Amino acid sequence: MGVKMPKKSKPQRPSRDEFELEELGNSVVEAHREKTEVLILLWQRDPVQGKIVKLDGQTQMIHIESNYKTIRVKFIDILAVQSSPR
Image 1 (spheres, helix red, strand yellow):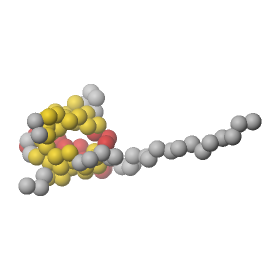
Image 2: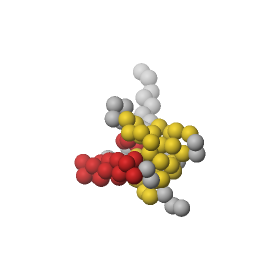
Image 3: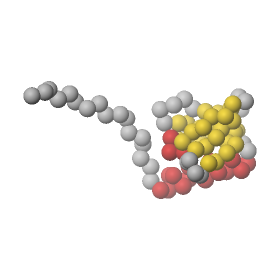
């Protein structure tokens, strides 16, 4: 008989209810429409500061332009959207 090794569980993404997701979605859309610079806090990644240039509903990705490069982030990985500190 083999010895069973305990499974390593990866950290779970924080769960959010419909209200939180809708509020987050509204702030993402507003930042995109207003073309304002925002600070986006991400799950298990460094925060990203820049302008939201594209919302891709097909792939659920947000395209953020930061320092002349485009960073793609999954919507589900966004924890918070804040107005960028000047």
